[in-house]
Length: 119
View 1 (spheres, rainbow, N blue to C red):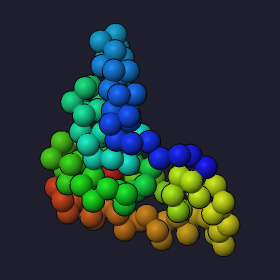
View 2 (view 1 turned 135 degrees about the horizontal axis):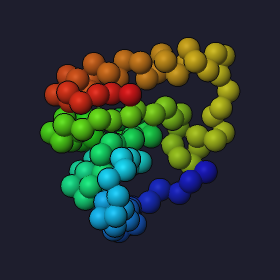
View 3 (view 1 turned 120 degrees about the vertical axis):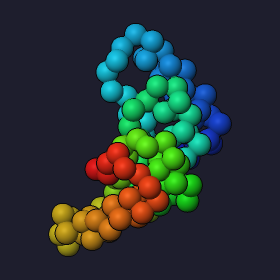
């Protein structure tokens, strides 16, 4: 499993790359993060989309941050933590189980004011 990266280290790793990519290209940029502070800084640096691998569950500020930024968010599915998720792969019906866990997130995102889109 993956080891958690501190927010400041995540910022140091991704923000310069996003800035450089934006200087040379207008291709859409997605930031994969569970942290609202990183999401905000990435959008300000030139990213277009937030991809939250925790489905908006890790950081309680993520959904309000997305709403204030008015950008699209992709809410992913993850069981457990990055350290344990690879061992939690047994499902009765993967499509139904994932839909039941994540399908209710859209009203939460739109409820905090995000108008751009939830995917």
